[in-house]
Length: 112
Length: 114
Image (cartoon, rainbow over all chains, first blue to last red; front, side, top):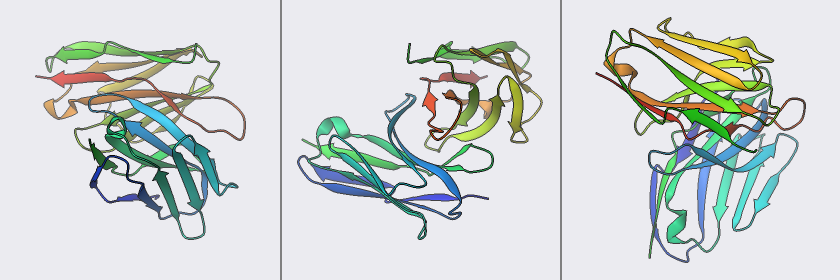
């Protein structure tokens, strides 16, 4: 059964810093890996999706990488802003069931 | 229309009530999902419908009954729930075909069971 782990669980940084969120998964037979943002009490907003054949995806200040062989993905946020404060979840989609397994998330606070 | 719409946003019900959560999308997606998220926990998969057929049931108690009447609509019928079922219920949909597999989530229905 797929297990997804995110480190750190919480992170507080001053505005303007670059930061890296880490995600690891136990079963490398994934279909894709997705990063989501969740604001308190809200639904999930898709940030980036990396197909299993890809190594990275970029959107604006966000860059996500995928290393299937080591079971790792990272989300890089450049020049962080207070509006980036949220919980960031990574999720791995398995090849068979096409269902996402989520990590526990990293709660990010960007201080003005 | 690029949204997954969930109603109601908030629901309070007693343990003997029968209620339903509704999820709608008009993006032509053919896979629809129910996830349950407890406070400060990640979402957990409950059900998956693929082309209006139930394809995954994650051993969810029978007091939760899903229904997919057509390709745009997904319901979750609730009966005789327990206080521990209080959570945010998230619906998602995914387009057909390969390679995407991208899930689009609604804002969720926050359920409180008294």
